[in-house]
Length: 96
Image (cartoon, rainbow, N blue to C red):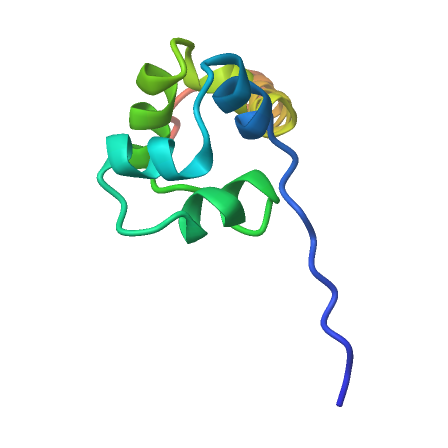
């Protein structure tokens, strides 16, 4: 059996949760989750919260979504700026 390589998603969720003085169980209850397993998975970078849960986490941790996932934000920003520049060079909306 091949060993599965897990690529972790870097985040600051644990740091923000701790700064608010919450444990995983408290955060899960406030977010309406049934258990701490999702909080744990997200904090370990084994998965991403849904967009709705990202908003909820941002509100709970008193921040915007960007600081929770700084590397992902940086990658998305870089990719979108590159695509935007490419479209500007080739012309906006030139369709046959």
